[in-house]
Picture 1 (cartoon, one colour):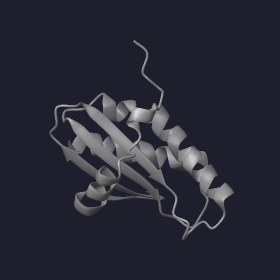
Picture 2: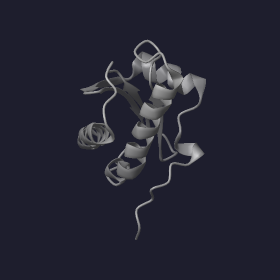
Picture 3: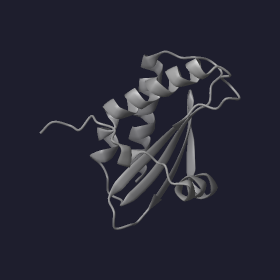
Amino acid sequence: NMPDFRLPHDERLRSFGAVRRLFQDGHGGFVYPFRYILYAECDDRLSIEVMFSVPKKNHKRANVRNLLRRRTKEAYRLNKSILHDSQKFAALDMALIYSSKEVVDYKTIENAVRKILSTVAEDL
């Protein structure tokens, strides 16, 4: 069966409470150029929700932030099966924060995202 490459609305982390909880109680790490934060909990809904952030502090121009966010979303969308296939927990919230001042190419972003997803998948 074909892996699901979509990134539907319900896989996006949007609830303010969940975002606040993620940043208060989550843990994570750094894989250049990303800082990532996770919050996993046992819940009866099986779900992975993710948010993508490119802080204005490092990239003043919206078009650059949009470009980096698009590249990140694409890399996540194409590689999220790493996480979804190894899902042993119930609910996982995750933030991918682009933390470099440089604008890196898609390949670099994809490799970093893949590495983060593999790390997360192993730790669960």
